Amino acid sequence: MADDYTPDSILARLEAVIAQRRSADPAQSYVAKLHQRGLPVIARKLGEEATEAVVAALSGDREELVGEAADVLFHLMVLLGAKDIPLADVLAELDRREGVSGIAEKAARRSD
Image (cartoon, rainbow, N blue to C red; front, side):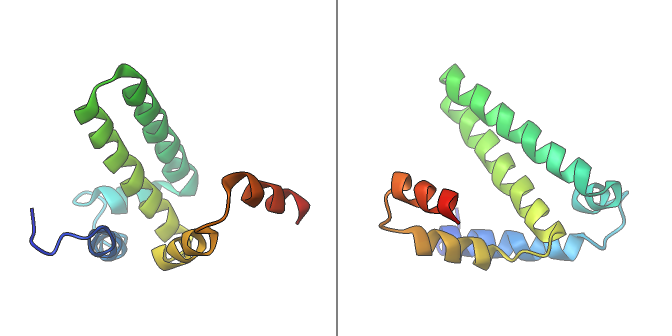
């Protein structure tokens, strides 16, 4: 594990790699292959990975859940990149919500 381990540095590096690989040869890059296949495939893949994470959570296997959670984060970041949404925007939204009750936050979204 790198000495500079911080979640934001890992996610920033991953975001950069995903952006770089979007234009790579689809025969050489999984990210490029997903982008070539289009947004519906990318979204569907995220859904599949999320379902696998739920199954792993319910199975009680910690290692499997860790792996599936990594897959979910990766595929979410591929989707965000495909929609030109920087991870910083998502992090800013989480920052905005910090300290706000989940119940109050959901109620505020319904009234918009």
